[in-house]
Image (tube, one colour):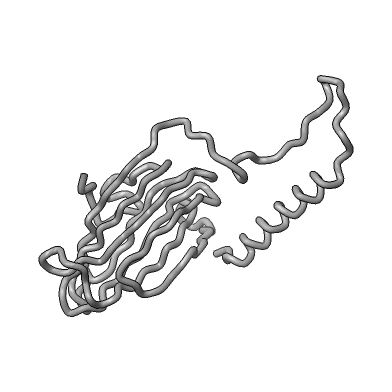
Length: 182
């Protein structure tokens, strides 16, 4: 498994080379046939080919100690695709939970059996809510592992808005067959 540090070092190296090349490049010739600098625009911006997706999922977690007290839920993204996300832990009756949920926000490529998988961890902690934005650094599935440490069941209400594909129930990234709430 490749590490986050290796990925970040590679990304920083590419960005540094692009910056140095841009700063040291001579002024372009006025000849229209002159070659233009080449770079991967996916590293800098993303132009959507499709429509923005808004996805809400209610993810049930059983009480601590049950087999169902943890699960993973992800979306599929291409490099450069972006999304806004928020989630909150709700207790029984739909009120905010009072015991923090463990989460691990990460992504990985999808590989064939026996191939090396690249995993990138974005953040991990315990919280009752989280929100932010995300740009996929690689093609693959990106999302969350959640674990309940409460004696009561918890539902994670996850909202993701942006450019991604929802993973069908039963596929890698949605093995627990979570269906959209809306």
